[in-house]
Length: 238
Ligand code: ADE
Image (tube, rainbow, N blue to C red; front, top):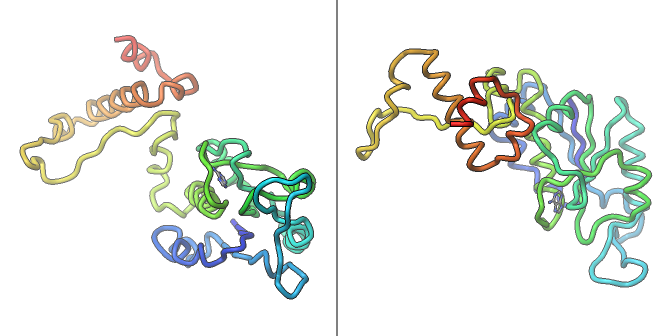
């Protein structure tokens, strides 16, 4: 899968693309990430990419011409990309969208800055506008990294154990259960006995119930959409 990131701060992406599973996936060629500097598509000697909004108001906007040139240059190369603009006005990004986007061959992630971008670019040259949450960041770079990581995890081979991707929080519409590792006792706090029992069915049931419990406490909104068995429903009624 190919990602093209369009930003005025290419340096933002240097370390995140080198480390951990993302770094490995890039080394192994499972993913390709290219970072493009929007200023390279400006035509004046100051490499200007922003201007004042018509009608007045605070701040600056990305002007249309450099964005247009950049997006056209990216679109000219195959495979044809799906263009995403990161902004607080976008549709809220989530687990389901991450999985859907991982089926695309190529994404362009356009990182906004300042007060946003000229509406004509958003309306006519962007396929989808996404927000990573109800807060305002300085720009779309962090949001682009969030989308990149969440999507990359679904690309086959990126996470060694595909089962673990499917078992992560949200995979079945629930938050993940708590986990423990050695030692069995730490500062007097013990690992729940059931996890040491070796009884696989009991362990699975315990995990499912803890998932249901924390989802009910922290994110009851998720339960409406989750796939629940009759036992799950009985547990939640208790
Ligand atoms: N740019 C600034 N804030 C953002 C947000 N919450 N999501 C996506 N892009 C952004």
